[in-house]
Amino acid sequence: MSRLFCIANQKGGVGKTTTAVNLAAGLAAQQQRVLLIDLDPQGNATMGSGVDKRTLPRTVYHVLLGLATAGEAVVRSPGGAYDLIGANRELAGAEVELVSLENREQRLRDALAPLDDAYDFTLIDCPPALSLLTLNGLCAVQGVIIPMQCEYFALEGLTDLVNTIKRVHAGLNQELELIGLLRVMFDPRMTLQQQVSDQLESHFGDKVFRTIIPRNVRLAEAPSHGLPGVVFDRNARGAQAYVSFGAEVIERVKTMRVA
Ligand code: ADP
Ligand code: MG
Image (cartoon, rainbow, N blue to C red; front, side, top):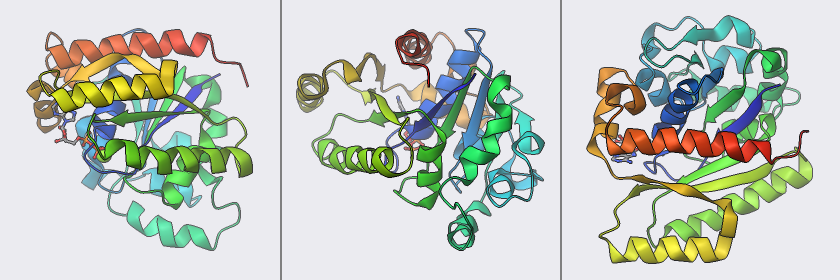
């Protein structure tokens, strides 16, 4: 049975895709069978996994609209040792096309059900919006991982996201829970970041992952080589942090109730 998690935050540029790609590679490096799903029309998780989004015959768009099964859309990340269902610009159209379909929030969940035994972890990289695509992500998973930078306005955005998770939990997916908040692009020399980090811990307690991902340029360089940072330079501080984060996630799911 697969553990399914969304990497979500409605803000752009906060480290969702970097977290999704590197957690996928970090879990794979620890002998986990991983499927990564790119649910963002920007296709950054696809490109960052070393798969050319422009030449993919089948993507998550086809899966959502019932034009392909999830199994048919799976490709292998050449560098990452995990499987991928990719995305490209076509996915932007799905938002409109889904509206008139039955079960429009549950399309991804239904499509992924046949793959449940094939993976230990399924990770979904969400777009930067609380859209119908993100709703499909939230309906398909048991948990949400929220990457965030420790900045002043980060806390404000968090309230909206936590409320969305509560609404989805109440109305659409009773399995859904917040797995944890991940501090990313962290720079301990910034007093404000340290303060926000402390605030997060006192507010959210053990919902804050122990692992902190530092700001590390090697993580930012990796996508242009079509590799996860964890593979591109595994000795870099950022890569090591994501491997530790993978271990923490494996440990944390052991204490989750089985649905
Ligand atoms: P999102 O998916 O939320 O839009 P990304 O993962 O694409 O965010 O990250 C935004 C930018 O920040 C990218 O250019 C990425 O390479 C860079 N980045 C992400 N995490 C780190 C980090 N820990 N250190 C340095 N740069 C990072
Ligand atoms: Mg992204």
